[in-house]
Length: 318
Image 1 (cartoon, rainbow, N blue to C red):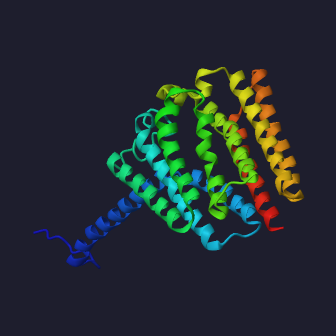
Image 2 (cartoon, helix red, strand yellow):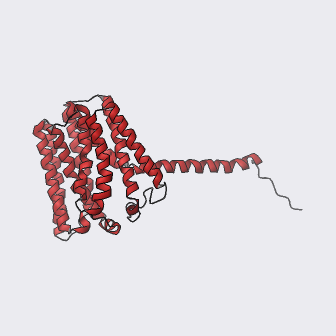
Image 3 (cartoon, helix red, strand yellow):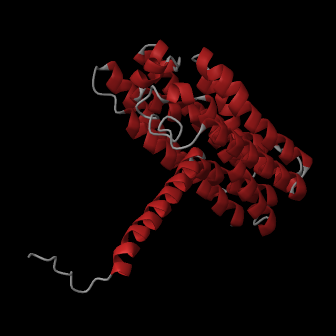
């Protein structure tokens, strides 16, 4: 008679523990996946870029370091507000996100979370952000935060994005709003310098997002979104990129005599020249029938804005 040999070093208890360990491990992976999904709904890279412009604006408004508690509140409240706007944007755009290769892996098209959960998540973040701003800043900063969320999700996402190729231009208002919100949180008003910095970020968004839209032109066309590169010629789009790059540089130089020093001025001149060079390069390559390489301008625009606002912060301290 053949009998089964016992496996050395194992016991019935250990054989039962293994499945339980596997279940716990799978459960932890599921929780981690859900957390990652909710974090991705807030579009952290966009939040990060918005905060890069907010803190230097607060420093200029305060003439140095503002109250650190106020900075923390604005950073947390602003992050929650931007995350709320992005999550609600994902909820509204879930129909077109599933048609685009760039966005089809987002949580809603991937069915990682439910639309109802995303809606509740976005509204909750918005409410918390407004409560924080109302409790610890002032009415103007709070009202502008609420207006930015409303503008991005209702005016831009629901209306402009789906109906006009000028969606990027008019949508730029909410993208530049954090500069004004930070300024208002410090002073309770908006000075000419605040508007100048707002203009820099506002005009900057056109070359930045048009470059991205060129890259994903077919995606937007497939989803029926009338981004400028979808409905206009390459020459028209690259011409607008060049125009708005020039306006960005002009706005940055206009801010110089309003209260900023030579550190900022020299930085604005040098980075503006490089930014303009990239826009001219994109335009001329397109005119000559060469590969446009729009993502080179896209990434360069991020570097430009980051360096420019770091210079603003340094100038405010010096």
